[in-house]
Image (cartoon, rainbow, N blue to C red; front, side):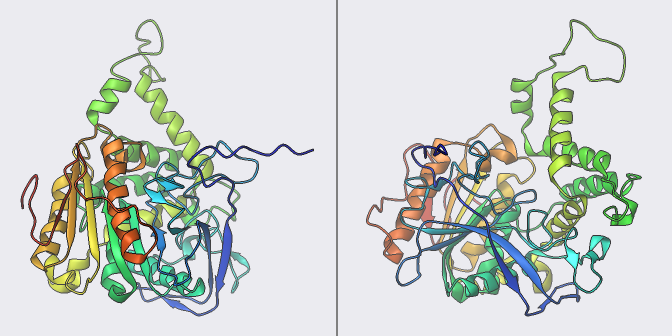
Length: 410
């Protein structure tokens, strides 16, 4: 008799990916067209009768559709935001219908570089077109159409996911009620573009990359992908956290005076790089980082971000973390300032957390309470529950405003 896995409190339990195929061509911002494509997604909770309680979770650079719960036979491999999404959690699946998907160009089931191009019968490889945040949002909207969801209660995400949530309010202002934009920015800084290019160069200079067509050569540019991940991982963590966790600790009793692994931080980064290289696609990494580089809604508004966000009708929760130096709080305040200038409804929170950019993925009581408080009000608005609480959460700076006030007034 097969043993059933017990569902721990607050978990959505065992889930299964779903697949949606689209034959309607998607014209990309780069001018190229995907004649057909597939999106892999998961859903949690129940869509209510008037289909008003849908929440779209947008993933960041290395994320995917597996947001919460676990897949059959893998109870320890929880979704990447399992601490946020589930019964009674901040994104409460007893009240909301939550959708997570793997974006186009991804490597976890949606059409991407490793997928077979129907026109050639071979993997797209280097021939897969570059995609942008706008392209992702357009494809996500088509998935919402397929699911019969005319309007999202919320689109949300951290980092690159937050950028997608913001883009939703610009491209489909009548189809979204709220955007939760966490640890994001209105566009990348020069430094961030530089980090991304160094990571890409590590990949493309790997002899096993073969110009992006390494599938046909039956190789994997693991060395380049490992280096790219090591570099990225450093930027996701704060200096204080690295110092507290690893310091200058060495693995042996004394210095070995060689180039092998000696410091604990070296061992940690190499482990993270090796693990990532086994599960992620190098071409997808290139595509995702370029999508980050290209994100700049103000570009077509003459550089005026406040003008760029003028179409938005949604309410906004914008959150940042004090120790995040990749997307520091001042970048979130740029978003807030532009939204306030345009008279939008904005809630801003700047959260004290020591974890750096990765804080948006981790457990933090104040952070989760503020998201829960915001979602309580959304639930009341769409008739998905009656547990609404004030937006002011003890111990967390959280201001609801049409005009902005709070830490770091712009």
